[in-house]
Length: 600
Image (cartoon, rainbow, N blue to C red; front, side):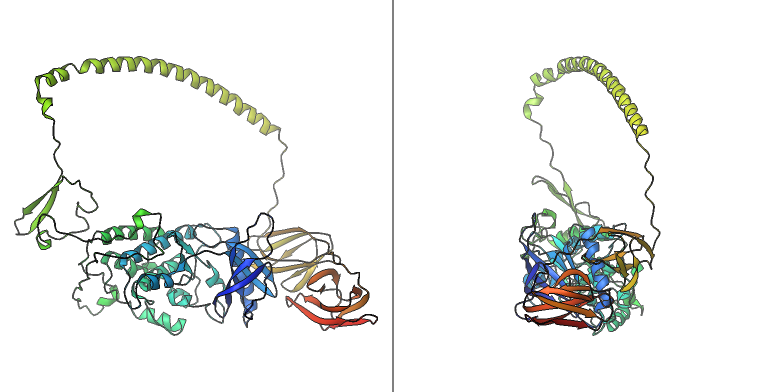
C-alpha cells in the first residue's frame, strides 16, 4: 500500500502497527458510523495477498467469527469481519497499552534482569486470563500463539490477550505467521495442534523472556528450535527457587510433565510471590532439572543474590487496582540487635511466615541443644484494669446475673410470640404457593403441544432462500437451486446464492454439527437510466453476477442494453469458482455502442 492507505470497507487505515508474511495490522478509524455506534479507533488485521492465501482465508474468517460469537474477558473481541474477496479483515476495538517486549524495555535497561517479583505478577495475571479460555466447553479453547508481541499490559495493569486462535488458524505450508513460533511448545513445532499444555509452555517461555530478555531456546527455524528444546533445559540462574520451580515445570519438553491446568499455575504463582516478597528461601538452591543430573554428579548449590531493598515498578503496573499484586521493596532487617546468622534459617513452613504481629508483641531467643539460636514470637499479655480488683467491683460482678436473667426471660417471651406468628404466616404462604402451583399446572396443561424442531444431521446443510429457484454454489461449484438440502464434509464451506434481480448472498458455513441457512434475498436497486447502452458478455452464460462501479445491478452475465452515463466506468463480473471479481475500466462515449467481453 502507499503512504496513504486505501480504505477497507467502513474503515480508513491510518498507521501500520505490524506486518508478517500472512497479515498486516493497522490502526484505523471508522468513517461510516451507523446509529448506535461510536467513532472510535480500531485495530484492523488484514489478510495479505500471497501464494497460500486460499489455504488460510477460510480459517481466518472462521477464527474471527469464533471470537465474535464467544467474547471472553481479557481477550480482544472482534467488532466486525470483512470477507469480500479483495479485502478480508477483522476489526478489533483498539486498546491502549504496551506488549511484554515494550514492558521489559521500560522496566529495566537492556542487558539487565527484571525483578523476579514483577515477572511473577505479570505471569500470574496472564495465567488468570487463560483460565476461562481453557474452561470453555466448545469453540476456541486455546490461544495457540502466545508471544511477547500479543500480550498487552493496559495502563490499569490488566492483561489483554490479542489474536486468540489466529496463530493456529494462519499456520500453513508457508510456515508460522510472525515470530510466535519462538515461544511455541515443541508439539506445535512438530506440526501438532495446540492444547492447553501448549499455552502453559508459552507462559513459561514468556516468564524466561521477561527475566533474561530473550527466549529460553534459540533456533533459526521451527525444526531447529524443536531440536534445541529436546536437547535439554535452559539454566535458571538467579531466579527465586519458588518461581524457578514453576518455570522449570512449564518449560518441560513432555506435555504430561507440565502443570495440568492454568488455575494450578495461578495458585502456585500466588504462593511463590508470597515467598519471594517475604524473602523466604532467597539463599536456597534453585530447583534442578531431571535431565541436568543424567551423569549422576551433584552440582554445587548456587547462591542467589538477595532481593534489593528498592525496586521500581514499570509504568504499566502503576495504578493497578489489585493491592495484593503490587510490587513493594522488601528487606529482612535484624531486630533487637540480633544478627541474621543468630536467628536461624527461615523455612517455608515457619509459623511466623505470613503472620502479622502487633507492635507490642515480644520476641524470645532460645538456644537449642545443638547450639543454634531459634526465635519465637509471644503475644503481648492482656492488661487488667486495677479497679476491677476492688470490693465494689466484686459486689457488682456478684449481682450481675439479675439483669442478665431479666433479659433472658423477656427475650424468651418475645421469641415465643414471634415464633408463633411466623408459623402462622408460613402456613398462609404455603397455601398461596400451592394454589399458584396448581394454577401454573393447569395453564401448562392447556397449552398446545408444539412439535419438536427437526434436528439436522452432521455434515448436512439445509437452505431455505426466498425467492425459490435461486442458484446455490458451494465451494465454487454449482450445487442446485433453493430450497435444497446438501450433504457436505463436516467443516467450513464457502456458500454463494445468486438470482436474477437480486443481490447475491455470500457466507462461510460450518456444517460440523449440521447447519440451517435461512435468508431472504435483497432486490438489487441500481439506477440504469443513462444515455449509452453497454453489452456485457461472458464465456459462461447465466452464471456470474455483473457489477458496475463496484455495485451489483441484479443481472447475470451476459446482459444487453445496460444504460450508463458517458464517462469512465468500472464494469466487472464476480467469477464464483475463483471467488474473485474481474473488472475492466471502460470510457463510455455518447452516440456509439459499447461491448465488454470476459473470458470466464
